[in-house]
Length: 424
Image (cartoon, rainbow, N blue to C red; front, side, top):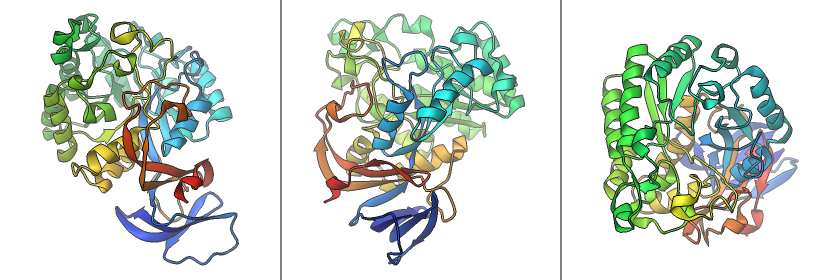
C-alpha cells in the first residue's frame, strides 16, 4: 500500500486538499487526514498536485523496426517521467501492424517491456503503402483505432472504403491529413521564415485540403473520425463547422503548435516537424479552438530520431521532435501561468478528454486503477535533453525555463517514476 498525503488532488473535476490511499493497485480512499495505516511508503507531497495519469493518443515508440531511435522500454519510461500512464502507439513500424502476425510482434514487446499502458494503432493500409486495406476485420479487437500516421491516405476512394469498414467494426479512423503534392518538399511553413531564408515552404493547404476531404467522407459514411496534429487556422474552422453539424469528429493539436510559430524557428533540425510550425495567426486560431472546444485534446506526436538524423539542419533533418517529457511543463508555463487557460482545462485536454474519446481508463476514482501522477508546480528548472529518458533528444524547448516537475508517476498502483528529492 502507498499513501500520498497533503496534496491538491484533481477529484470530480476540481482540486481539493486530500490524501490518497492506494491498495492492491487500486485507489482505496480519497479523503482528508487518512490515518497512517501500515503502508509500503508514505509520500508527503506538501501541497503538490495529484492528477490522474496523463494520456497521449499520439506517440511514436519506434519498436519494432527502429530501435536505434527509441524502444518500448525507453519510450514508456520517458512517458512516465512526463506524467503519462497511457499512450497510443502509431503504426509506422517494421513490420507495420497491418495483420495479426505483425501486430503480435509489437504486442509481445509491449507485454515484455512497457512500464505504462500502451495501446497500439493498426494501420489503415498494408505497409502504409496506400494500395490496399489492412486486415481491419481481424485487427479491430486489438487496435485502439486505425491510422496511417506518417503519411496521408491520398486516395479518396480508399479512404472512403476504410471509413465504411471502420464504421462497421465500431472503430475510429485517426487521420494524418496531408496532400504530398502540395507539400512538394517544403521543410518549413510557407510563411515568414521560409521567405526570409529562401527555403521551400509547406503551405497550410497541404493540411486543410485533406481535412476538408476527410470531413466530407465522414459525413458521407458516418465514420467516427479523429484528425491528428492540427496546425492551420483553416483546419480549425473546418472542424468547427463540422462539429456544428453534429458530425462525430474530434481533433488534437500538439504543444509546439500552441506556444511556437514560424517566427521562432532557427536553423536547426530540432525545429523540423510535420506539419511544420505555422504562422502567428495559426497559433492564435489553435488557442481559440482550445477555448471553445473545437480542439478536443492535446497530444505530443512524440517522434524520436537519432542525433545524426536530426543534425542535418532544416532542409536535411528528418521530421519529428520528442515531447513526452516536456509537454506538461511547457503547457503549464506558457498557457496556465500566463492565464490563457486554467489548470483544470489543461488536465481536461491532457487526460479527461483523451480518456473519454479513446475509452482509455478513468480519472482518480475510488475503486479504479491507481494511474496517477504528482507534480510540483512551483519547481522551476531549465529543460535539458540530457535529462530525458527518451533516446530522442531533439526538442525546440531546449534550455527553456519552465515550471512543473514530475515527482511521481504510478501505473496500476506501481511507482514507475520517482523524483522525491525534488520535493524536499
